Length: 217
Length: 192
Image (cartoon, rainbow over all chains, first blue to last red; front, side, top):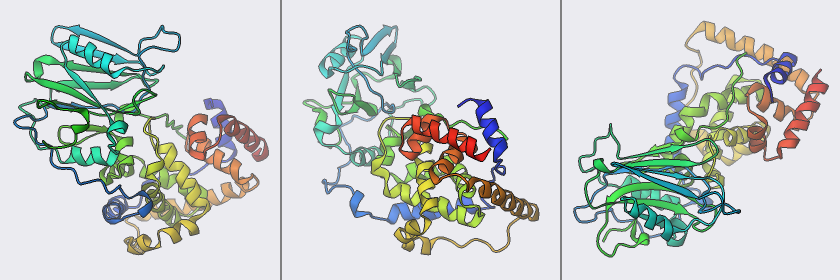
């Protein structure tokens, strides 16, 4: 709708200007709602009875930095084979990854291999396949130990940016990562239009499997 | 009047935990109360004013706003993982709550009983006068708006007063974009 249409409509039936909530009510209602959210339990949406997640505690391996992006559809190649699902550019200490929002056919193994070849070891966690709910991931994320292996929060090792249209771009600064760290990306619905749910850079123990991502060992 | 456009802000829809970040939508789906706190901070004012335009009473609008967030919490699993701002989703809920306030109030009666009471006297006399003027103004406008069918009123409130584009209004109401366009066109001709 263009502005002229909007203005014409508004001239017909003008509404009063917007107002804030009366003094103090925003805070009062926020506190009230937060208490309700924390204490309420709706059976129809209650989390499943999955075993409570143990605290993430890989031996001596803690997150360096994390990243994430919001949902986007991505693909290895577009339907006509012309549009790559992702592009990886390695330059100096930077690994830049651009993921396109259109198409289907993202291949996890190819993506992990290409990222490794670019100098940024990466593992993908297929959220659906592993049976993780978003509540699982949120619970795990909240329970992360408050250690960041000396990461300078003002200079994050991993930057994520969403482009208009849903494409995703993220950049890993290798010089800000301790050696032996791996980029772990949580996706849902692998093989279809799937979406990045969360991400983290961390050390992984031997024999780590993607579906171990939320478990202690 | 300033025209607002809520076209989504995907970059802002990211939340951070210790060492991990998740999308706001994923956190909403996860039932993270803090994500709803962020949602409240971002959109409570818009929901409040949208509700006032629909119900014509500031006190009821405040109740509708609170009910909207309680309903949003109840309906959190219906949020899609992809997308930008959740404002359209909230305004859709607010519209439904405004139309069926009693039903929503029944559903959340226990919570409403715990809701802190409002002060009898507002902080500022000027604000009180302004709010009384608002009620008088919106009453006249709603009288004219009553000539329209309910679906057209809803589209008008979202597109014209809340400044949403066709796509966002369609998302809020759960109807095709073409339906929004035609309803708004009818609203304009009928209101004129």
